[in-house]
Amino acid sequence: MNQESLEASIQTEHFGRNLFYLQTINSTNKWLASLADVGAEEGTVTIATSQENGLGRLGREWFSPEGGLWFSVLLRPSITPAEATKLIFVAGLAVAKTLRKEFRLDARTKWPNDVLIDGKKVCGILSQMKSKGTQSNYVILGFGINANIDIGIFPSELKNTAISLKTKVGHEIPLERLFRIVLLQFETCYSEFAVDGPKHIIEEWKTLSCFLGKAITVKNGCNTLIGKAIDVDPAGKLVLELKSGQTRSISYGDVIT
Ligand code: BTN
Image 1 (cartoon, rainbow, N blue to C red):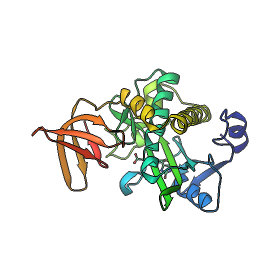
Image 2 (image 1 turned 45 degrees about the vertical axis):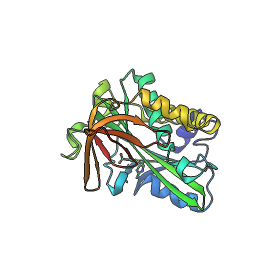
Image 3 (image 1 turned 90 degrees about the vertical axis):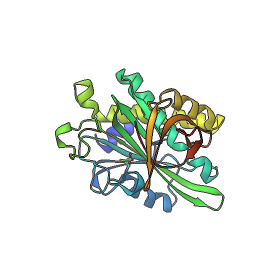
């Protein structure tokens, strides 16, 4: 991959037309935030070969050595911050659809931001927002796809929970092509979100879920809730039915299936 070949290969209308291909950097999300703060346009993309300080959800670190696909996309939707939180479903759906179509994999979505294969995480998405009053100023969506990473080099705590595309399909994944098709699918899903609103996207995302209808555990902060995942509501919250029959709407946390 290099700047010229990436620019020449992308098939999107807007996304990635302003593209920054970088070698090892701290984090593509951080890098893009500094561009967004000085007025970068919607669709600007940062992509890096590896990240020294990849950011995960809930303040975690994201393991991002060479071989993965690490990139971020800047969005400037004219919507409220509450609506903008639903963009995570657009990104997850785009990745799951791409992996299903291109590699014939049974890729599944997991609330709120994961894409899984065989119950293991192949992609995580980080959404970061800056808002101005009732409007979101910008949203950065960072995609971390474990493409060509040997399981052997995953840190021990990830060895049983993460998976790499290369391991699953049995050959090296051309990163440039993977980037091109995920970006195109993301732009398509984002247009649908912009035109029709989030309802249809969340509904489609739910059809690919690996956890709805199942008994799950949700950890948020020091709370642990056990119940049946019965829905993801139009606000993007996870609806859990507790043993008592009561339901809880949860806005953040980790789902364990
Ligand atoms: C998670 O599941 O915790 C979210 C992981 C998101 C990782 C990606 S890699 C590209 C982008 N840059 C970052 O620093 N993080 C996101």
